[in-house]
Length: 369
Image 1 (cartoon, rainbow, N blue to C red):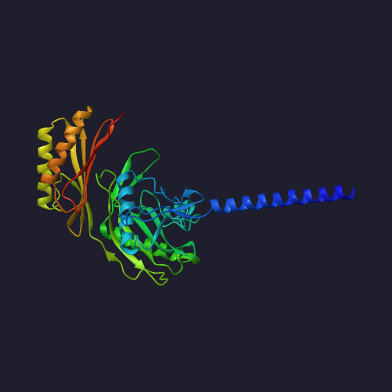
Image 2 (image 1 turned 45 degrees about the vertical axis):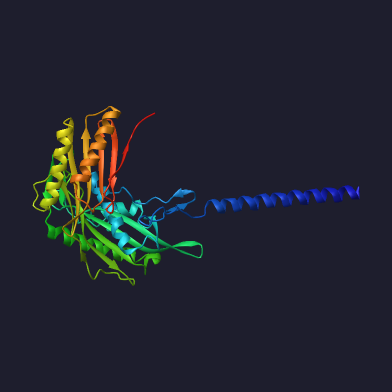
């Protein structure tokens, strides 16, 4: 009997220890799944990203804008342009990119709204929609991390502030849409005031108290524009500064080709016209050929060409793509990156691309099995 009791006691202890081991193992597995991981860097042109709890860290406020933003090109131009500004101040070799985590959806919505008694945090001025313009259109936050003791620490931030160039409003619900064009002086003044206020608010967070914060100001393009807007000023705020001391001017323009604008270099206009003419003469069944030309300090620095076709046969698309490639290499400006998209009503048909250092285009035709 005594021997039996000893055996039962040993079995109970064994089961208890096994249960403890299983419980501890489960805890460790849970901790491992919550570890922060990094997305591998395929090129120094891009930042490494952050994966947490097995998921990519998405922005807490992305997509929050004032309802009047109907030009999707503004959204893309705003985000891409902001990332290029960030690369000038936060090296892709040193910093890790993380989508904005400090300005959440609720905060962004309050900031983008008008300032009222119920919403003292509003960054748009108080007043009636029919009389007082809404200046602030969108905000974007980009966080830049560094690794310290096997963990990530916030070490820099870029904030994009999108300011309307045209204010759209209704005098009554579902009524006609009216518009008021805002002057450049209004856009600059409001942008700088709002940027200052955002900087002051961010500094109240202990994590952001002393890190460098870049504030970039963006002028929205009108809703009917065929290109997005452009950044016109930025400020780098180090050493815990709570007020912007210096705004650096930026000379960036996005233009449409063909265009009658005097802002476009005649050589660039002629090059595109020659390319367009050659392509249209060879393949007359085209709906249109346009381009977005990107200028920095008055110099062409990039081009996106869009060609809409009525071709559906794969052999036609292959022949057309090859011809476009030869004409692009012959006529379009050299020394700049150029993308060419060829699409029809059924979607993207083919794609061509050339880097600034290359003379030849890479092409790809989308086919089906």
